Length: 239
Image 1 (spheres, helix red, strand yellow):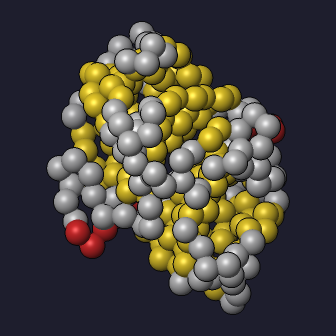
Image 2 (cartoon, rainbow, N blue to C red):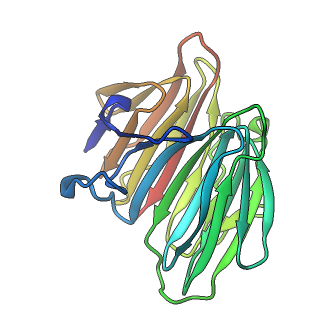
Image 3 (cartoon, rainbow, N blue to C red):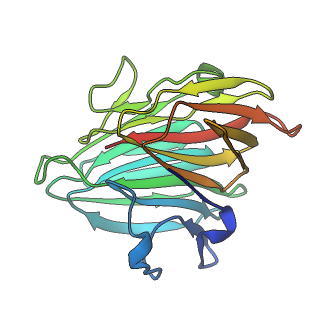
C-alpha cells in the first residue's frame, strides 16, 4: 500500500521568524488520524530567518534526527555540545532521560532550512547523547547509503531504534531500486527535484514537499525526472 501525501496537505505554521510545514500532528496541529507512521512521530520542514531561532527547550525519550538542507544551523545543548552545521549535515539527538537544546540561524543574511524527524526510541531512560556528520551531495549520488542506523557503517550515525535513514540524490533518468516486500515500512519525503516512484504497475509522480508512506509494497524503483536539476529525497526504512 502506498499513500501519497502532497506538499499542500501538510499543516503550515508561520510564526514569522520560523516557518514550518508539519507532516504529522505537532504543536498546534492536532489530527488523531495523522499522529504517526510506525515509530516516526514528526517530520517538520523548517525555515528559520537570519539571526532567529528556537530557544533552549527540553526533550526526553525521543530520537531526533535533523538534516540541514540549506544554510547553517547552530546547535547548542546542556551536554556542552555547540556546533554550526552546514548544508549536508545530519545530527542525531538521543534525548534519553533528558536533554535541553537550542537551534538557531547564526547567519546575518541567509535563512536556514532543515528537516527534523522525531522517532520513538527502542529503549527509554538512556543516557542522552548527541552526534553529527557531514555527508557531501556527491557521495550520495545514485546510491542507497545509510547515514543513520542502529549499527551504522563507518562514518554513519547511531540511532536508538530499528531505523535506517538515507538521503540519496538522483540525476534525471537515473534510477534506484529500493528492496521491499519485507513487511517493513518505508517513508519517502521529497526535498528537491522530481521523481517517479514505481511499484508494480503503479506509478506516482512526486515533487518537492510530497511524501509517500509505503507498507507491504513490492519492489520499488525511484527514477529522477524533470529538467530542473537533480532530485534529493529522504528515505526512511522503519518497522
